Length: 382
Ligand code: ADP
Image (tube, rainbow, N blue to C red):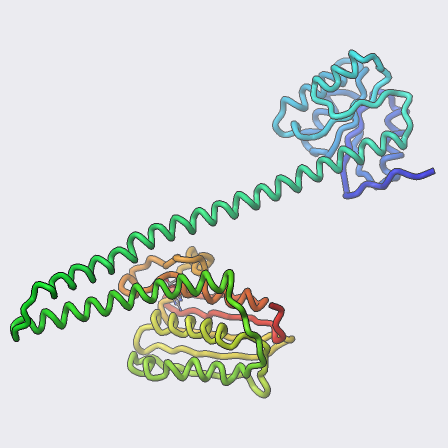
């Protein structure tokens, strides 16, 4: 004889029956199948337990003194806390009218006494599977809603950025270009012309940076064909930092690089990692005032490479820390109103690191500085 399966997941069942012997029997059988069982001998007790313990299912007798099973079910369905708990009637009443009424008041199934335990267990398991599937669908819906909200937020940010950050430089360029058109170049106009050319170049550079960052992010997130190869982490860091020693010196900031000790070979797309570390060093330079320090370090630990870019710059307020990796997010704080940026640098870094199977985080304190840490598996899973 095949046995119905034990509870597929740890489930709580409330059994309601005014007949003590029946109640015991059902409880024993359910407990032997790994269900957690609550018992109630009458309607009011059943309602109290259902509200406080929220079982996954109620097995409900109908003929009980005082409040009968139909009334109990109606009350359960009228209460938001217990509305979704499936109710299976288990009753000696076998009239079609009674069965129909059971479904009308909100029952999901109806078992007539005398019953076979196997059938009761199979029907319970069936309803619990439905409960679990409903919960899974609800979780997926919640996930979809979150994804939708974050996509919609990104879309709004994109529109805001595109209208402001792209239109403004364009207007400046157009304004200066039309002024140049009207100028007859005399000595007197020379200074004006230089100013116009400088504004045009500056704004074109700003737009080019924005467009490049947007394309890079889209590419890394979707179509970038990673070319993993063995690369020396030490020389990769030296290479990035080498590009910025002069700029750091001019800004009065000390830039140091501490490569990992010994062999520091990892498998990664060197260009992508260079781009990521480059972005972090550029940020450190942007957000660290003169007199500050920037330290680029790397070490290998437990089959992972840890790359840290630390600075003694303006820091990030705690309420912004979790959002700086979002596309287009820029911290609004008094200390950096004039520092230009696209708000895309860190999202590119995050996308690169995650495509390598790694992760990035930041520790930061306003006025003290920030440390960005990239953790990459030494062997690439792409
Ligand atoms: P941005 O182009 O604005 O620098 P990012 O995506 O690179 O864009 O960075 C997002 C925001 O995170 C920045 O606008 C800045 O407010 C903050 N941020 C990034 N790096 C640092 C840092 N090293 N120190 C302080 N704030 C930083």
